[in-house]
Length: 475
Image (cartoon, rainbow, N blue to C red):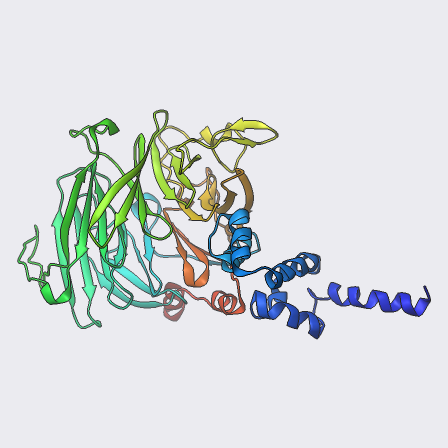
């Protein structure tokens, strides 16, 4: 081969190597990737990634939609084809990270919680009497609404644009619907328990409450049939009190669940991926329920007994049941068979739990040291959890048990990691679909976005918390 032809052969590779630098990639490559992987996908790729991207692009072009769904299901356990592939791989890339020093208070007295739908994000804290409502795309504060009860949980019901915000503490639930900021329709009711908090989840049509061994299903009352009801709290009358919800079902968990009617039972509750099922965790049992919104029915589909440790949080994937323990380990069961999934982890040592430290270190917490439960978010067979040792995100493959990635960007922002500083533990986490992001609440707010296109990257990069803006304007 002549020297000229050798130089010519090297030119394409030289262009590829420059993709991650300042030079623009060759026009043909840009055209090649833009249409299938989103606007300017090359801005997310290094030169090392280009071979993989080339193979991936050919798969995008060559496979039919049905074939691509098979590939995505096999790789990530997701059923939505190319979009599932984008989301699954995004969690492994460096995120857009935002750290916000919030003003919720410190430690156990703050306990901030968060809920979201496609439009808004609602966050609350036990140290404040207001709920902050934010835009789900920018996290800018929209308005603050008042809650008369000391809140520790929050959920959102109703359709986008007509949300009902539900807060709860250990005995009471307070629901309110803001009507174009001109007035509130509210409803409040009380349970006789000594729980740490009442656990709720919401959807477009219903509110589900787990309380002391009961599951209560409330349906949103149609506007045209709502009744005004008069109630009085311990301190004052509640004005504009309206029947926002009607109780449709009150189901007592079976006696063989090991739940004693005389005891106060702490539960955890979460939706499945499409809200056709939900999962409830009790101290030593996990239950999966099918939810029929049209007929106000729930049906028990799976029960997992957990005799050796206490359940603190639960999540439901399409193929897996997930629960964390009081020692911050994560356990996984096959949803179809109910069998616990065993793993070969840590140099071949067989274990039946996931944790992002070496075996043995998961028990270093003192018996009297309070630690918040790990938060869980399922995406196909990808599990994203908060960390065993502080403010970080862990990305797991539930099928293999492999810790695929640990995102610890908060360390660079001066957030001390557990167990050195328990106040830095995460009290709640929510996945924001519109930003493909996780918002973690605690003494600090921390935000990890994993953009799958330039629009999401721009939104995450330009994100500013309303609290930051307010504090800067006051300084």
